[in-house]
Length: 143
Ligand code: FES
Image 1 (cartoon, protein in one colour):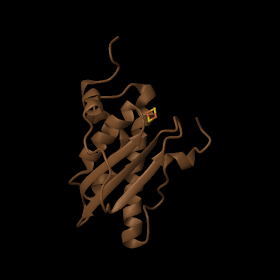
Image 2 (cartoon, helix red, strand yellow):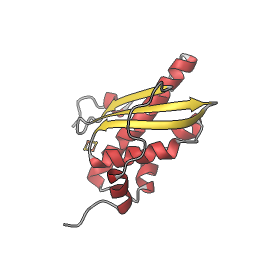
Image 3 (tube, rainbow, N blue to C red):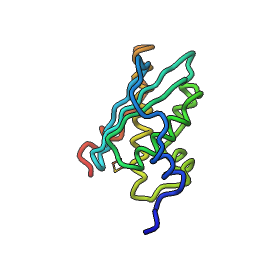
């Protein structure tokens, strides 16, 4: 059977970047995917407003692993403001696409990253990301 996944997705799934926990992270994000119940944790290290390291851990599917691997690679070296502009759509594009039923999995990575930045800002300034809420809180009862 032919795979529905692009070579890049398969490559990041088989060989994910930045998996694991981080010691003394500056921000921790934890989110759940309302569609499937999978969960994701993301950790960032920030220096002079730049994300110098990012890691993730997930109980999620292959698409969640591949997209989180990609988003951690994409935000490294970016300022907080630049990292906030990285959307799940950009991640999916960088992976040469995902099957439509798996696009929700990429939202998990974006939410976890935003949640980690929110946590970082809260610790640093006492205020989180203005108006930000993970998707799971918005559609708590959705499936
Ligand atoms: Fe749950 Fe993909 S099926 S994150």
